[in-house]
Amino acid sequence: MIRKAKFNDLKEIFEIERMSFPNPWPEEIFYSFTGHPGFVVHQTDKQITGYLIVFVVNSYAHLANIAVHPRYRGHGIGSVLIRWSIEYAARRDLRAIFLEVRENNIQVQEFYRKYGFSVRGRIRNYYPDDNALVMERKVHDK
Image (cartoon, rainbow, N blue to C red; front, side):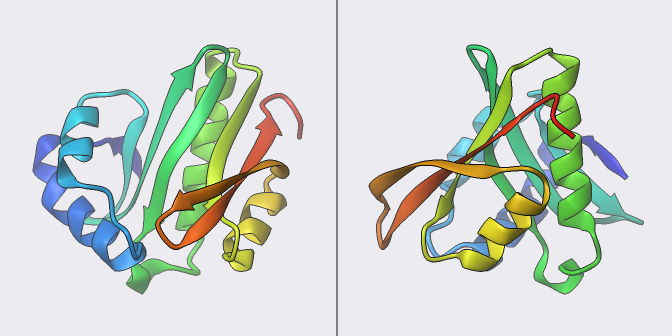
């Protein structure tokens, strides 16, 4: 199930973030998004299995962060979260949803392509150790 993230979820979210990224976001960023309608968790039973942060920038949705607990990867949770973010943007009648992904992370790029995202640009040195590709998907495309 997907639900809005709560303050009490943050400890589990921090753990997933640290296990998922070589340069995890500082905890303060997650605190700042607490209560935001685009900060959601995927929960299985009582376990937080993934999370997503998406917010509106002009007429676009920015998918800023998404992660699934390593034990639960490959079970469709990332797909559920991505579809939720697309629906979130559609409910707000936004034009498109965009995100940044590591240029060297081909597997994740392919995952996003499966949901209609395509590369729109490149940002040099976006990450401390890699460039980013900007990927975008029109909201009302199938």
